[in-house]
Length: 98
Image 1 (cartoon, rainbow, N blue to C red):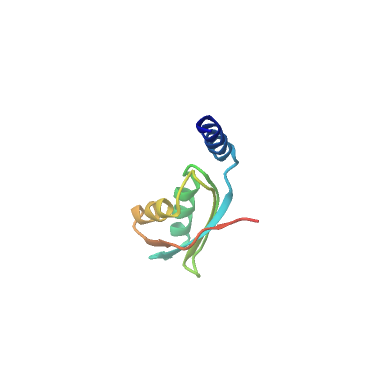
Image 2: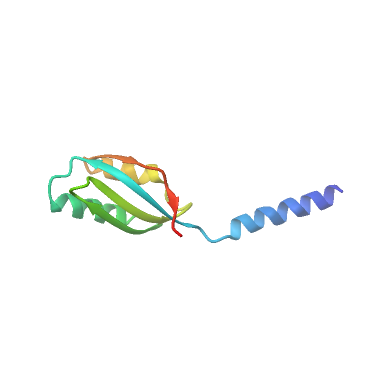
């Protein structure tokens, strides 16, 4: 009985570890942007982070939309990277890309 439980647990953990990371999208509210140079700086910084597939910054809306692979980067890390550039960023709720 114990052996069967261990095998079942091991199999479940292996399947979880082998699954492909989901593609996710999150919007960051960004304050302090004033020009296209701000947009380019944020897109460049976020675009070079591991797991980030794309980043689009909208100056007028004051937001950045980031697509990334789940488990490789977290929304809080994205916001922190923008903060380090001198802006104020707050991550919204991430959602899977369908």
